[in-house]
Length: 138
Image (cartoon, rainbow, N blue to C red; front, side, top):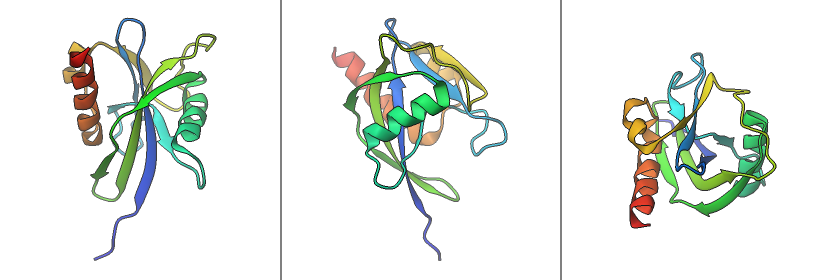
């Protein structure tokens, strides 16, 4: 049996001033097409998670972010690939242009109560649980 490759991935839980999260809809032709995910992407060789996230957000959304704390990493095995997902809390940088869907089908600011109505990748479930727990503790 061949081992699945493990891909290192970063993502940002970008919150606005109203506590909503920015979610990006995956294009229909990609793995998990139509699902709503946290924006981010793969780390390049010798790239830090923070640098990768700044690069990916600028490439995918055309905006700039300020990173907050890291959340717990999640490793999840899909049928053909395993990802190690490193999430960070974030906000748009003060002078940033608004995000735009350069590589996604759509973007959406989502309130916590709306999350249950969206198709979200399995790997994101523990990240959402940690985000909710942090919000409840405040």
